[in-house]
Length: 521
Ligand SMILES: O=C(O)CCC(=O)C(=O)O
Ligand SMILES: [Fe+2]
Image (cartoon, rainbow, N blue to C red; front, side, top):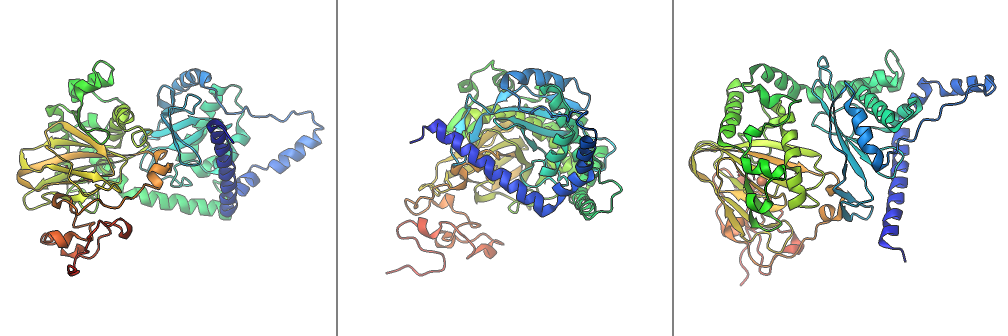
């Protein structure tokens, strides 16, 4: 019988082996690993060494594993580099998920995280903004590296990690003599690789199939990033409040409600700042000063009047805009960083280790969207801040959490207030009542944690049988199979009839009837 510690260690070893195996297969499939080795002529180098009769000692690169006690020194060395904008303080990773999908909060044995912002290249067509990187130092010889942000990079797949060909090239070239130097070299190489992979890998000028494949990849990535970047560049010349767009400066105290600012500085207590609506599920607090809401809205309305194209935040929302699509990604990331501590405190697990976001404006007024159907968010934790204007109606209705027996049972109504933020689990079912007069714009920040998303809690959530028929307020015309049994479809929403999935067949409440069926006698 293994102790929990032993079984976790075993789990990690298994995970490493599985990862190593997967990486090998991928490298073989892409052929890139082989090419990189070929390009740098290791065979020739080895032959040269042999011919030199061992006169030259082959340099063995330092292991890139840092001990926690090395990290403050490493962080200081990184801070001295001109290609690095900012380095956070090393901190114990708030969440790790083991091979079995179990979550571990702040395991004192690590891993440790270091967040670093690298300079972009102002002359680069795509990567002119700073690049966000998270280094995670665990038991492996090299740190786990994740590239943040919303831009696509050649050779970086969905998990946002550098590929094997990067690591092969980097370790072969590394000549660092200290842990600090090793991390400087790593980040320098990573930046070089992200900005110009052909040059970093030595493919420039080559006509080999791998070089051509990489060339095509770079072209596709430039196309994927292209439209967004064009809008960002154009709007950069039209924007009104440059301080919102600055990637380097930090958030201004003056934008925030004094209570939340003081809380984040440890000068206020949570209970004096936060309203607890539903413990563990829904809270609210004052976030922005009213003046700042006006400033942000001034920018948003300026964007609307620029006529530049904007993607909509999601299929349920026809008039919103995605903030990173207009150049506000640095602002969003700073805001996410600012709110991270609160996330960890209120929702350990889904609120920990955020490394992705989707942040957008929703807009409701007569003649446009009036409200929002019941739904859950593709978010682990959601912040929803009201920016104004004057309006009536628009209560935010909360029901149960997805998969819970009370998923479609009413739990509470939150009334939006300018500058105030309601924060809830993404899986909590919610929807916005129609606005009855005026206009409402809210900033919505969906936070994603790739670590949490590896957990059983996220991947295999329990789905309980519904305890009873749904409360009318919790019904969704987009998602429910029984909406038509209880309500008439709103005008223009008839097309959703018969398309619902909720409740799944094995979670139907006693007496469930799908819409369109006759009541049984
Ligand atoms: O309009 C609101 O306040 C809710 C918006 C929302 O839930 C969403 O966009 O996901
Ligand atoms: Fe939502």
